[in-house]
Length: 170
View 1 (cartoon, rainbow, N blue to C red):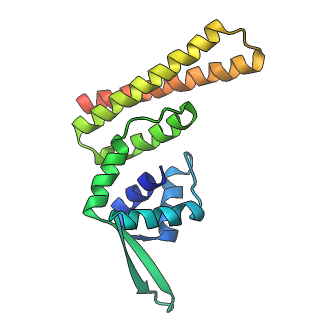
View 2: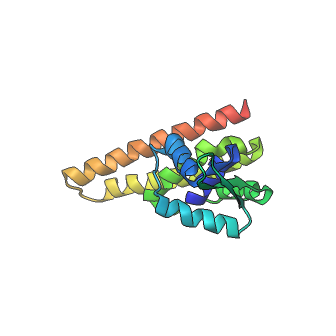
View 3: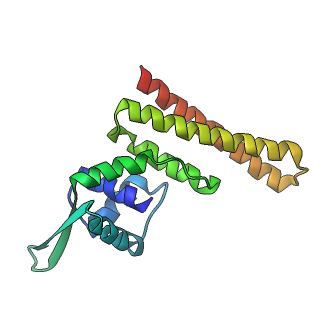
């Protein structure tokens, strides 16, 4: 997920590591807030993979600064990461799916529709699994409320995806 976020913000502009962190927080803080300890190694991996390049410069104050930019291969990697199949883990699925939706305007309409279909199918599967648990298990009050809330969350997410599908086809 961190690689997708970094490539997304670098696709918009050239940034320092601090700038990458700040942009991710400004755009995605309601979904995730990665630390420098997560960003720095991810930038290193992306640079080694040829997806990001760095340029060292001296700031006006005489301090060295490293600026990162996305490469052509990085742009392709960003699209690939957006189009990866949804995560199997239901806890991670919603956060990652929402991030992918926020990045979807980088895809063409056909790619968007393919991604939306995959996300909707996975969300529907999780919703059915949750409803089956609620129907077949004798749940105490708190677990029942948690699963009921999860059901609402997935129904809302499916509605959101259907709205995006409608926007893509009209």
